[in-house]
Structure formats: structure tokens, C-alpha cells
Length: 328
Image (tube, rainbow, N blue to C red; front, side, top):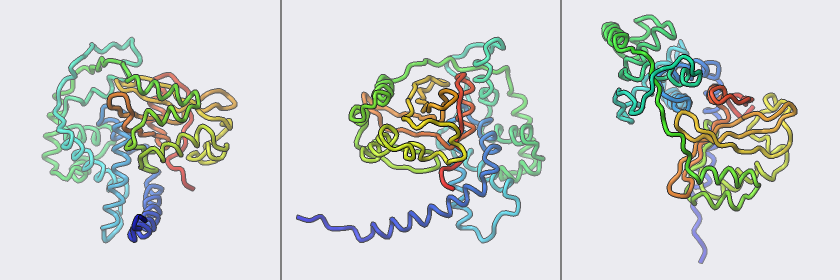
């Protein structure tokens, strides 16, 4: 028995290709604002991963809003920050974020450099989402009261009240003393990849494992995993360099990268390390989701320079960044 073909599939494939072009154009248009946008979210959130995810979410929302608008914004930066602030408030609502002290705290110690860096994100942890945004826009980005009000879709009076409450709540920074234990399956995955055992790599995934290269593609399943990790392990040098534009490759050597597992801010991260003429340098950061003894999701950040820099700086590792996109 033959399987009936889906006549809608070719049309959808063409639509996907056509949608990719304007989204890439929007991403390039706002590329100059990416560092400021990341910094804004980094002041608001607890981890660089949350900040980068919100940056990507904002770019997607900006694409959608612009596609349904009659006119282009006259002030792109102010407009993008308004979109970003709305995404931040909605993100907090979805997470039902309630300001509270961490369950496990240790006193802030200036002598501990990494504790100091991790404590920085806790300065505004006790504030409501709107108080955080108002404080960051006013004090970190030097927005006027009127600009803050427009960005947060509120009144100047409400901004003043939020700032007053926020400054009254600010306390000595505290940092979260979290357990640093990674699931064994992630360690097994790294060992299998570094041994170039693709079958073993795939055996640790599910048929439904999600695979995402942040800002570039989203997919899933074993076939995609086989192409992705098999390409890194066994393909030609050009294929191994896929995703790194020529101007960012530098003196990278034509051999497979290796994976290293690290704990960062209470979460296990897998770093992708490439060999260069001047040594080994990190070029990618991956976040894994697991269930029992399998990996259910892999999200890789390769075109997130601020995130890579922050994570590697805190871990004391050398790195190279790959720009914000993999297309020319």
C-alpha cells in the first residue's frame, strides 16, 4: 500500500523559505542593538541563558509586530525596548514569578570573585517585574521618566512610584548556593561524542528530542541529531565550520570539536571547544534537558556573543565568538 502524499507539504516548504528571508533581514537590522538588548535583559534576569532567550523572543516578536504594522518605527531603539519590556512582563506572568529570597543563601563576600559576579544578578531579585524594568531603564540606560513611562506603557506617576518602591527594597546582594550536580546522562553524552561514537550519542536521545540552534533553527528527532552531530564528528572541514562565518573562524583547525561539561549558576552546561593554532577555545554553549536516563532537549547558543563571553569569563575559560548570525 502506498502512503498518500500530502499536497500541502511543498507549499508549506516554500512558505518557510520565504519567511526566513524577511526574518533574517529584521535580525540584521536590529543587530547593532543586540548588545544593549542583552544587557537590559541581563540586569532583569537571573542567568545569561534567560537573557539570551528573551533577546531571541523579542526579535521574533518584533518580526511579527512589524509585519502587521502600517508604518516603520521612527525611533527603532525606543520601539525595540518597548517590545522588550512587554516581553519581559509577559515572561514573568507566564512563570508566575513572585519576588522572594532564594532558599539557600550565603552572605555576600567581596573576597570571592565568582560569588560577586553571581551576586550581581540578585540585586533586583526582590523587586516586582515592573519595578525591575523601571529601575534598569532609569538608572542603567538613563531613560527619562517620560521615556520609561512610554516604554512600560504606564504613566510618569506610576514610574515614580515604582522607582521609589524599588530603591526602598534594595538590599545587600546575596547569592544562591546551589547544588552543583549534573545528570549522569549528560556526562555520558559528552564522553560518547568525544570518543566519536555516534551510535552511543544517538542512543542517549529520544525519537522526540528537541534540537535547537538559538536564532538559527528549531527541529528534533534522531535524523536531525544524526546529521548535526555526525557532521561535527566525521564531515569535511567545510561542514565542520558550518555555522561559523569565514570572518569569525580565525585560526580554527580542521578537526572535530570536543564537549566539556561544567556547572554554571546551578545548571549543567556543555561547552563546545574547538582547537585553534593558539590553543583550545570555547565557541558554543549548550543547555540540556533530561528525563530519567535520556536527553529530551538540546539548545545550543553559538551566535550569542554576550552569553558565551559571560559564561566563559565566569568559568575562567578562553573563548571565541561567532557573530550574531550564520548567514551572509
